[in-house]
Image 1: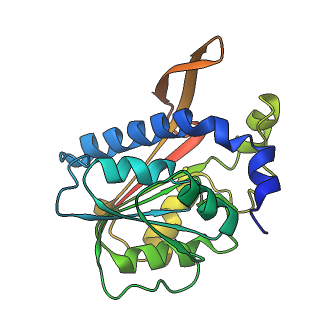
Image 2 (image 1 turned 60 degrees about the horizontal axis):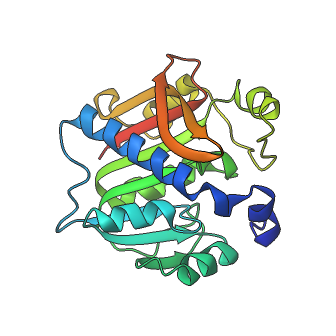
Length: 221
């Protein structure tokens, strides 16, 4: 699947910058609270945003002080990120392939709404784990709810090929990757953008155990 101009225009992706940034902030606050540490303090640390697209989340990490890298398979998306003058190190690469980094060099890896697009998310998670010396945060839609809910709100994405339930992700991480249950946290949320006259005012996140539309995955390495 080539994620080119047509794909991003179909999603009206350029208009989603504020929503995606609000979402990223909410998830980083959630992870900070669960870990008892401030992930918005990136001074002297290195971060990687996997599936960075136009660089919306990568720009947040840069502003937080991280030496930031953005990785995406889409040439078009990376060109857009550069055109928008997002000041991070960009790399075109498939996260399912071995990463071109030596050792565990990242303190934080974010991977927001990417795993569901991949043929082999397990490979992607293993590659992230090998490159991380700190925290990995992923979000991905709930397998049972993604299609019906997104069709209802006319936001369906037919490139979602690797959907799972929270428990299925947990089994993959613990049984197939061999991670300790103590180092894995998975929770479900429903995230609601609040608008007035099409202007985004804020972003409300509601935890809904097992049935939230978005699955949040937190991994300590």
